[in-house]
Length: 155
Image 1 (spheres, helix red, strand yellow):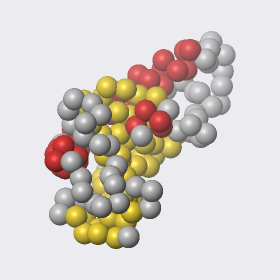
Image 2 (image 1 turned 90 degrees about the horizontal axis):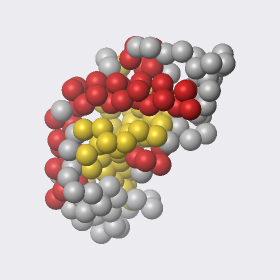
Image 3 (image 1 turned 180 degrees about the vertical axis):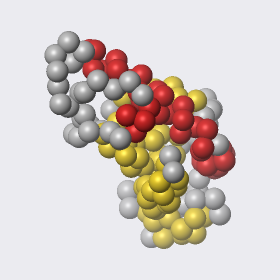
Image 4 (image 1 turned 60 degrees about the horizontal axis):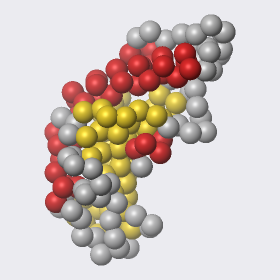
């Protein structure tokens, strides 16, 4: 089933609502999957609309915070696995956001039900070179990064 929503646009239901959107990710026009939690009736929480609109309005600033958080997470993960001592092609030394940007690609934006957390909740999923199986996920609450980890933190 397909509906035209005033905020999310033309979305399709198949175990959840989705569509492909185009965003600018650090100067590159990128297609990403927009996934919206909701029932088949196409009724969404006001909080979902607010969270998505706020993300889009502030996207240029938010993506910078996301990238810094991913760089920090990568460094911590690299240390946890011992690759700060031992050389690894999968976990090379990365010190700048430009370097980490070369290792990730944005895959999706997730708009969960509004009553899960207290605030504007958004998840963002990425593919990454260091963990192709689990990917990378970022959880935003009120446009601030609250968690970085495997993709499931964003879903």
